[in-house]
Image (cartoon, rainbow, N blue to C red; front, side, top):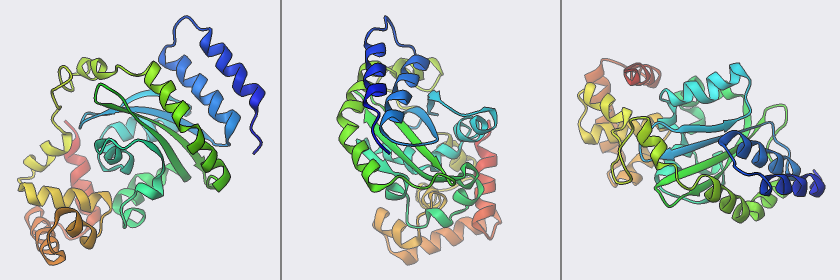
Length: 265
């Protein structure tokens, strides 16, 4: 795709002349700028803070897709999302989903049950940590019919990353108060209680069991879990069997079903 410099500079001129930039206007400006650079089908912008439910700042979805990508996502699946876990690590830059996903992500029940509904060929995100402990993620999505981002376009987005980061920090650099307004923590120092933490307590799992099962649901293999937690693969498998026995289940799909059901208030 050829860069549309005329559209890009017109968009920037309109934005710099605006008296104020609410979420919708800012999202539309960023959308127009990105579409002048590369081809994609949809954009969604989420703000993440600690373990709180992410805030939807902007999206381009119709009603049906909004339910999948936003409403359903915010109800609990975000806790298993590689993008969410990347924000927890406060990483900055442009990343493809497949670069961030655990080794068994694309065969996990989370992928089959939730993520496959998105019908995406590829998703990539600009990860922008801000000074108030929030990370804003600008996700660009290409559907199956469009295919993945070509290497040249991905390279161009990496070149654009410093500007995109500065843009996001200027307009969304103080979002901590919005999380406080939703009842998910007060002030800048308090960390909200995770919905996942409540699930593990409700299911009477130990901290070690909860850590392992959460990684299983995210799509990590036993080997990957062992490396992350610095324990043997055999120990991982023993804990996993114990949890399955405790919950009276025998498969990951049953585990995911129990997890999602218990996420509901």
